[in-house]
Length: 186
Image 1 (cartoon, one colour):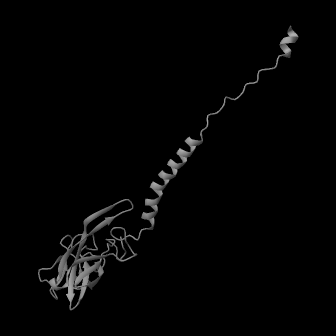
Image 2 (image 1 turned 30 degrees about the horizontal axis):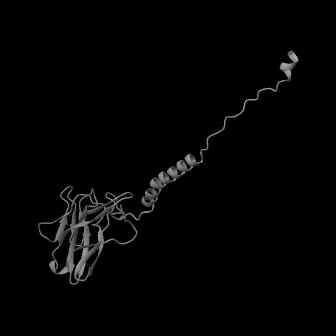
Image 3 (image 1 turned 60 degrees about the horizontal axis):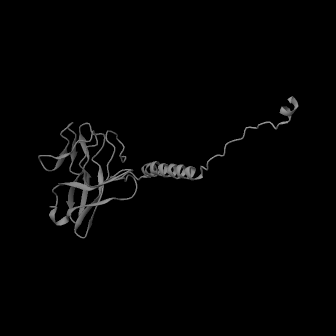
């Protein structure tokens, strides 16, 4: 009998049949790719954006219509609010106040200056003489053309491109870094 027990085939453990995971693996792969796309695309858009308001800086022009040329008296600076779409890597917010600019009509042409002080970003006002600008925060003074005359501002007022299209003044609105002597877009 001992021999009969020895002649029995040995029990070899077998691996249980594995359930098919193909559908689950496919779902996990698709979900992972979708998640990676949600993270990667906005990151790439942000990293490669031109930086201008609403995502533009140093790149393409962003012309914003401010008002009619006929409503801008010659030789008298006027402040205009710049309203447009604010863009970042993830969202677009419509009709936001992006800043303000000073416009000075010179015949059929218009000069535009950012109303943001290059020192610390305060709002630049028209002087009481209406022939100069001043920053009320830290007493920087600027000539009517934007040249820094006194105070802590590290540079002149930031000029912006302006044009007249169909009787309306448009400005290529941009923001610049504050507190530095070199004019660089923010």
